[in-house]
Every structure is written in structure tokens, then in C-alpha cells.
Length: 478
Image 1 (cartoon, one colour):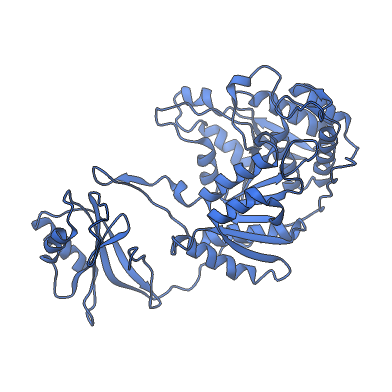
Image 2: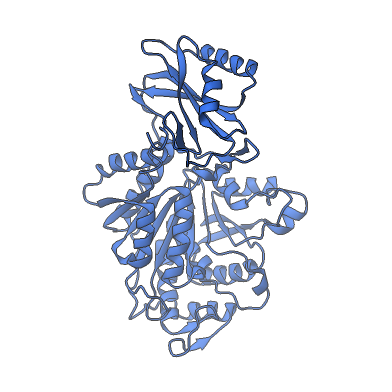
């Protein structure tokens, strides 16, 4: 018997959670339930996280969390409960299977069967943003080696355990050479440990286009947080419906399972909603807690129900569907099919006692780190980079001098183009003179000289070499 935490959420959440629990309990799930309140009512009661501290205690104690969709009120500084939960509990892996149910659910892609493994904690979703000038704001993209290693290893382990043949990496490392470049580099390293599994890399834009056009060529896709968020919804939609997809969020200690769709408040209380997305999440939960026989029974009964043409309004189609049913009637139909398998759709067979080998991250030996320069980000309302360069060169010192100015990443000095549009945010690079050593107190001196010269420095970034290799971006156009 496994004790789990359940949150019924908002909108259609209570209806689809009741239907889901009814099905899995009828199938013999050995679970005990602690229900907690989350979502809109908790937000409006004054908790900006949408969850009370005692509810956190319940989730952390039980380790397994089945959550229905919630509504986050607009404005007022309310934080996304999904993002908060993933980060606080270290749920680094978001797993979203997207499978075609053709010909019973309409789709152009008859053979689609993709699992998207999305990094869940890092990237631009750190929410670290700043306005630095009148015209420019920034969002920091943070990628770590531990984060890359954990998610990529999870993808390969998932493929190994569930009999998948290929893992594809999506990045944009032709542009973001440091951040996405690290993800690609780690992917290539870990792929060597799984010679039995095919591996490949695609640039995200053409990869996403190919996935939307020919999804059958992909199997498991592993990618960074933002890309994964976008392509998993695309994959679910082209498979037939976002409403059919479930999601697992896996960490080293805890796990959360949910549907990928929202709370749909306009459909609440009408016995219309399709519980399939949350049911798929619960099947992933049953596999996670080792109740694979129950998960298999529920999945095959669900497939048989879809195959029988017993459909909720969102996927009902004349000529294909046989009966339009509500939420509770759909649940009853699945229960009636427990013990049966589909005859056209492929029945599932889950591996019993499957264990993913996911060792904890071990820190690598420290690299040799050497300071070689600094980027000063300057708020300046002029438009001629040569004028700014003259001002900046006046604060050169004997061991560091101005080598480059960029504007929104484009090099504008030296040898810039007059046609390049410039805003009021300038990256001004100072690097050590040949044969000179740069120290952090030299940067302090440079900033003091900039202050005296009335140069408005809004941010600095130190430039380092690691093991003799430059670890910073150049300006486009260099």
C-alpha cells in the first residue's frame, strides 16, 4: 500500500480527479490518499504560492503527488504552483508521452509515438529578469552541468527501461554556444554510455518543424526547459488533443503527476471534461510506485474504450465515434473494460519492477579558472558607437583596454556598420593587455574610473578562461 497526496484543483479538476481515482481504484490500485487544498482558493486566501505550508509537509512525507489542474489568479504577484513545486521538490525531469490513437482520434499522424523528456528546473524559467535601461530588459538563461547530466541520463535510462530505440537531443547551440552548447556536449558524453541506443542531435527550429511534419521518425526527445515546454504541447496537439496527454515530474526524492491541460473553468461542473489527461498521469504514477500490473490494466482498458468509440465531446466525431458521454460515464466505460485489451490499437505491456539507474551527480575536478577581462554593460542614450568608444577609451588602464562594443549582441565597434540599429544598452569589453595579469581589484579600479567619467555602468560580467579555453560569447559579426 502506497500513501499518496492528491489535490483536486480548480475548474474541471475535481470532476476529472474523481473520475481518475474511481478508475484506478476499481483496477486494484493499492493506494491511500491524503487530500490537500491547492489553487485559486488558497491564492485568494492570501497565499501567493497557492499552497499552504502544512500541505508541503504532506507532499514531502508521501513523496508522490497526483495533482489536478489549478487556476492561478491574474495579477497580484501570484506565483505558478507548478513551477514552484518543480523547483522546491527538485523535480528535474518532465516526461510527456504523446501517442497517436488513429483512427479513433483524428490526427494526420498515424504512427506517432513520442516521449518528450524536458529539463524542468533551469533555463529561462529561473525567472531572473531585470530592466537595465529605458529600452532594454534581460532574462538570464542559466544552464548547469548537473542539470544537463541528470536530465540526459534520465532520457537514456527511460529509453533503456521502456524499450525505446533512439534518443534525440534538441538545442540551439549554433547560436547559444555556451548554454545550449553545454547541453549538447553532455548529451554526446552520456550517449557513449548507451551504445545500444541510437542517438542524434537536431537544431531546435528544424527539429520542431520535422516533429510537427514527420513525428514518426522520433522516439525519445530530450531538451531544455523552454523548448520542451513548447514542443510537448505541439506534440500532444498533433497527436490528437492536448486533453489526452499526461505528465510526470520526477525528482530524486519526490514525484508529481498531472494532466498537461489547464483548469478550463468554463467547462467546470457540467460533466463534460475528458479525464484522459489526468488518467494518463495516474498511469505514470502507478508505474512509478511499482504497481505496473494495475497501470497496464488501466491503460489497456482506456485504449479499448477509445477504440469502442465511447468519447467525450472534445474528441467526438461523427462517423468515427459511437457514443458521446460525459466525464463520469467515460469513467464507467473504462471500468467496464478493465481486463480487456484493444484489438486495433497496440496493447501495452509494462516492464515489471523496472528500475532506472540514476546515480546522484558527482562533482568533477575543478578546472583552472583565469580572469581575462570584463564586460561593462552601459546605459548610454547616444547613437554613434565611435563617440562612446572615445569616452570608454579614456578609462583604459595599463593592464586592460577596450577591445569591443556590441549592441544587443551585434558588434558595432570597431569596424561597425552605420546601418546597425542601436538601442541604449551597450556591452563594452575590456580585456587584459598582452602579457598582463588581470585581478578583480583591477575591475574595481575600472568601475571607479567609469563613475568619475560619468559612464553609467548597469551591470558587469567577468570574462574567464577555463583550462585555457575562452568561456564567454563573442559579438556577432566577429
